[in-house]
Picture 1 (tube, helix red, strand yellow):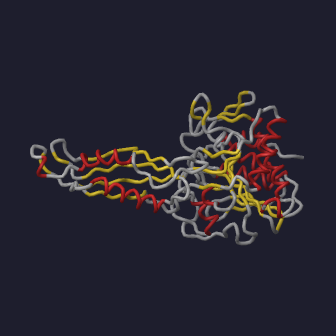
Picture 2 (cartoon, helix red, strand yellow; picture 1 turned 180 degrees about the vertical axis):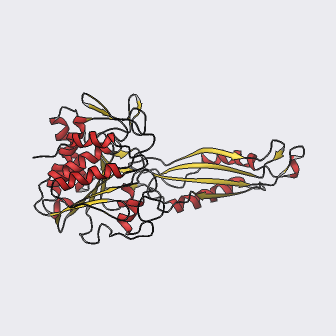
Picture 3 (cartoon, helix red, strand yellow; picture 1 turned 90 degrees about the vertical axis):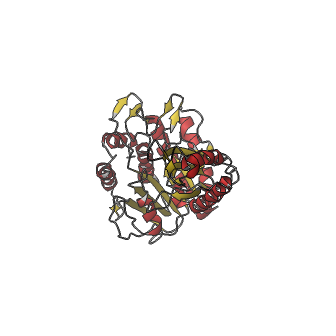
Amino acid sequence: MSFEPVAFLEDAVRDDSTEDVRGTRDLLLDALRERGHEPHVDAAGNVRASRGSGSPHLVFNTHIDTVAPHVPFERDGRTIRGRGACDAKGPLAALLSAFLDAEIDRGTLTLAVTPDEETLSTGAHALMTGEVAPGGPGETGASVAPLSASDPEPDAYVVGEPTGLDVCTAARGRFEGTITVEGVAAHAASPESGVNAVSAAGRLLGALASFDNVEDHPQLGAATLVPTGVAGGESTNQVPARCAVTIDRRSVPPETAAGFRAALETHLRSALGGDPASVSVSLTERETPFLEAFATDTDAPVVGALADVARSATEASGLGERGAVRPFGAATEASYFAPAPTVVFGPGHLADDEGAVAHAEGEYVDVETVRAAATAVRDATERLLADDAQLRG
């Protein structure tokens, strides 16, 4: 008997996993055990289960944590509303269904569900490195077996996020940091005796628009750099000695976090010219790498297989034309798994014609898209694991 993803999703959305994921994790563990599997929770808090053995190796990944505040469950006909409905409990339900129902004659299928994608991604970091970073829900300082420890190196990943049943092969990364401008304090009545850090910061805000250290990406387009906050000055009658500007960078390959920081600092120092103020750029401290940009070759077998079956599954369900190959609109843990061929796929939308959906008060998912996503991933999995050539190209 095939698994019913919508019933699982209803229970999962009812559970508040904004601060504590244990309730949703228990639902996932119970569903796996009821179907005869032996999942385990590693020291980083990841739920892991495997089927089959040997090559090729396909990995399903998504996350069970959600952003605050919790939005209660509602069911209105074919629509489920509530926090996590599309980000990412809808995709989780679809991947779980495909994991349980796919007919596997050879190869390995792994389900690896992380606990903190919305915050530090310590779970994804541990899956790839075997190290449990501080700050997450796992056992800080412990070690876990990385995905390639006992099974073959994964050949491809399917990461569950709300893509509207399109197959997303790339996403921008997200870095955050602070531009710090240092001047010299003085009495506001004699501004020439000091160095005004706020005035210098104002000139640097204009220089952000001309920062261009990486070429436009063929799938993702241009990187973006946005100032998101300014703070400076200690007293209303004092020339400010310090000003801090927070920034948000949405990167494209091949830019790295370290490369971005160094290039921006050089650019801003040049923009100051002979100004006596000084400037430095620092990235927000975190125990795990930032979610960097990633891009999978659109000719990769996992892309073609999933796009084909997504189109078929959505047409059969009367959902119209889906399965387009395109970039994803937000940063995701998929970047941890690249450069292995990685796609982002799932039911639901980041936003629709009415506005924001994921992370918003009106978060929802259409139940028929959840079932279609489950069918698409199941059929693609059976095709990809049929022989090495299918998955490895």
